[in-house]
Length: 334
Ligand SMILES: *[C@@H]1O[C@H](CO)[C@@H](O)[C@H](O)[C@H]1NC(C)=O
Ligand SMILES: [Cu+2]
Image 1: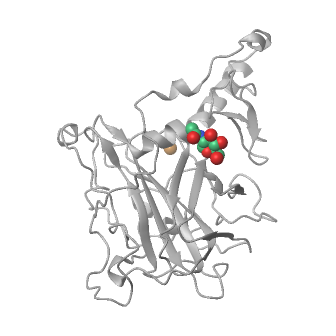
Image 2: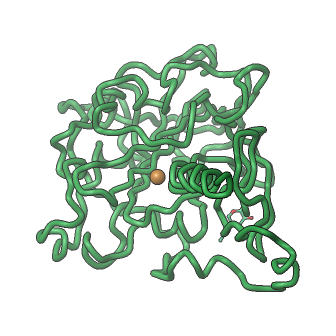
Image 3: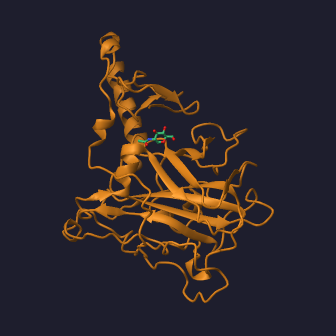
């Protein structure tokens, strides 16, 4: 029954990877920077993105570990590459894949030592939040989340505060998936930036947090049950971590708190395109059904896995998408 066993293997592999993703590309102006390829050998890879090991989520049990900083390995150092941009510029991140609609987007930065980010592991109360978005409209249980935009477009755009003092910074993009009751999934990833410009601002110490440390398993946005009765009527979601730094209050000031756990829900940036409630299947365009009849397997839907050296499933993509290599171990219909 080789057919069935390989089908089952393919199905379980798909179940493992299809839901998760990482930032595959950072776009700054017209320049695209490739993210780390977690399914490729680390040896010889160069990326502005810090090394990580898989598309799998971190869980509550990982909150106290350094992995929560920049995924696993959370203390891995840089590979000598950083992206230059001016304060006030935007960064668009494109995830490789994403299927969890109830999810928050949280974006942090940390100033690196003046020598650069390469040898800085991000430890200490150095992180400040520059953007976050959670529930966009409706109720927690049935509403539209920031994760809907990631599912529908795979993109998020953030603006570097234009008052930010120049220098080397890490930027940490995090997706927080909330689809499982009381079992949040964290997908943090870090990249190295060189910020230019004539800004002089830095956030006050009251808004600086550390990873681990910024989140607690008891934070209401983390100890969260999307299936609860309360979630069916609650129209705001308490995003974990500090308030977003608006770029005006500056460091060295009168910070008093620890900076963590305020659950600040500052308005998210208005620059994001509106998200719609359309199901993910609308992304699969149905153009020419021509060659499918010649295939002996069911074509893989967009964003599904279609190749990789340990992959045993169908290598054809549904019409409208093409199989795109993302390292030797992972190809995806895009
Ligand atoms: C997402 O960003 C990529 C890369 O810039 C772009 O090609 C694509 O059109 C964007 N998708 C949407 C839906 O905006
Ligand atoms: Cu997932």
